[in-house]
Length: 489
View 1 (cartoon, one colour):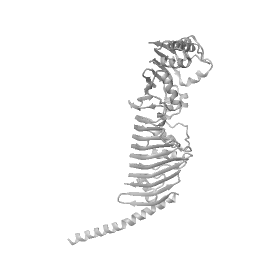
View 2 (cartoon, one colour):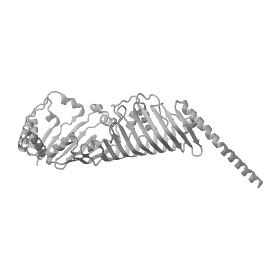
View 3 (cartoon, helix red, strand yellow):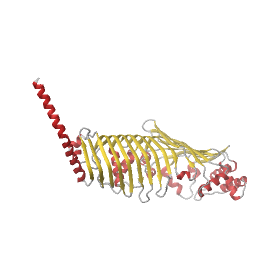
View 4 (cartoon, helix red, strand yellow):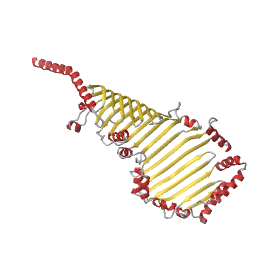
């Protein structure tokens, strides 16, 4: 009995001593971290440490290591430290520096400001859950320091959830502003992203009082940024160089507005794109633009001019829709545009289809890496293409508008335009009987309307590496491309 009492008392004493010593240990650790941070040239007003919550809080941090960075409050809780770093003698107690790894259950930043090469980012708050940042290279950043460093961080980072509020980006020089009310990311894994949601995007020129462009919502799932991050993380990368292909499983944008669209009476419903994968090397994609309407107001010279043109065509507004679908089949060595349809009620339907064959490794490498010049090294070839123009009133309306300005009737305009088409002789092209027939078919389309179909069926397929042939004097385009034209009602 006495023995148990003694043990209990000893435990109480030890716990009491530990509790009394805890604030001193936390204060000591905070001083060590502050000294370690400031040893690298960064300043911080205060550092707080909480051992029980594995928490570190920094207040008024300012760094000029990369650009000009300031943070009003930085707090990480649920901290853990990679075993490999501990074995090398590195720990948070020695001070957190740019390039250090960081693992935290929860991270919050408020009043974040970044200035780099004249551009400025202001972020009201940033919250991250499930953060795991591996050590990343901070040397040899090149002239685009902040962009290069951000790409390297992206390659080293994984996050369960990220939310950023009230972001304002000011462009260098002009000071134009891009604002985002809310931006969230779920399941970020070294450049692969499960989902993104953006709300309240606005773009405002410096001298303007209202946004020139506005978008309410953007949603993206299955986003792959690994290739762009790899390219941008190189110190050798410069603006205009390829960044590689961005993969997207599904994306949608809606709620478009702003002074730039209102000025011309433009409204837009939504833009959507979706890609489905049938195995590793086969995919099908579809992109749609819906709800595009052009109804110019009676304000502003340019809008009035467009409105007058529509009125001369007998239209109060113009409505258009776009629907484009295609597929990649790498085992079959084919890239296909199954349909690209631009349609407007009472105007026309224009549909384009095409197929590239013999697509080889050089071709897919050029597509994946975004290097268009590399296509010239590929043996990929145009197998077929078709352009179908179905007149739904566009010819009549367009000729009526031109006739109004020149004092001619629609039949007179049809005859005049058809004659100009028949007399057309493109310079530097061999004028053959087949080309003359093709041009005559186009002229009859002008005279009668209907559906004009232009086919290209080269035999053999025309390789992309043979593009220079079309620049030599006098190429026979009709024979090279297998061009034909047909007209139907």
